[in-house]
Image 1: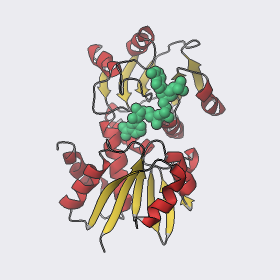
Image 2: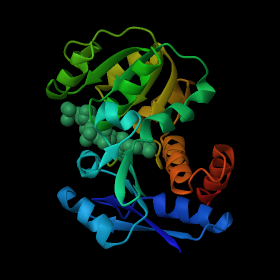
Image 3: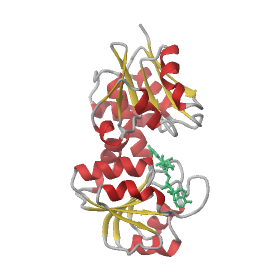
Image 4: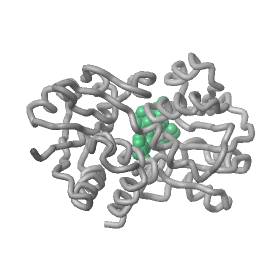
Length: 264
Ligand code: NDP
């Protein structure tokens, strides 16, 4: 029987996930279809999943924590952070996973071995990446606009600063997980601070994709090696699709095929 998958989010119209997954299903002759669901109330996720007869789903902002709560069982890295971006139906139960952080790690593989990382921002994405970096023994610093969300990272014994307390060190990688530059032309921190950070950094990454943010433009101007969030998006989708297709295709094949959907 044909399988049905969906992405839940609010907003969700911008999501590239239906294109990525449907492209793969068609190219590799998988009898499945992937749609999008605009869900305003995260507490309705579980009921909506079952009423649509889905076999699996991805979850985007702002429902990733609600997705964690909706699952019967959570596996792997999602258990560490309490954030789920992929759900699979297994014997009538909802099983939750998180593929965002591993997707990011795959995306930065071309940067080689890294040790020190500065994360700009302290939201959901920062939380996922910080925990994943911790697993691999990175030296992690967090810089956020305001104090409120830093408590979580202090509990992890990370170096945490607001713009007021920050003192720049030397970093292998700086990653922007703020939404600064997404819908405006702002930097993730005051421009002079960003200039100093970039002058003491080897590699730069931005979670935002589909546009050259002022942050990345400055990295480019400084002749640094940088990448936007497109590969992170790609690899979280690759890992999710691997689960949806019950590991029928190897990860390299899945990535090669899905990447072609970015050209459409
Ligand atoms: P959250 O809302 O959880 O966190 C946003 C963070 O950005 C907060 O730390 C906030 O600081 C900070 N921030 C917001 N606006 C500004 C600003 N103008 N200047 C400085 N700091 C700011 O967001 P998420 O972690 O869910 O997502 C963050 C970004 O990552 C989004 O742009 C999203 O599109 C992208 N993303 C990309 C993915 C991909 O696959 N490529 C996957 C997931 C996310 P404060 O605490 O002070 O409010």
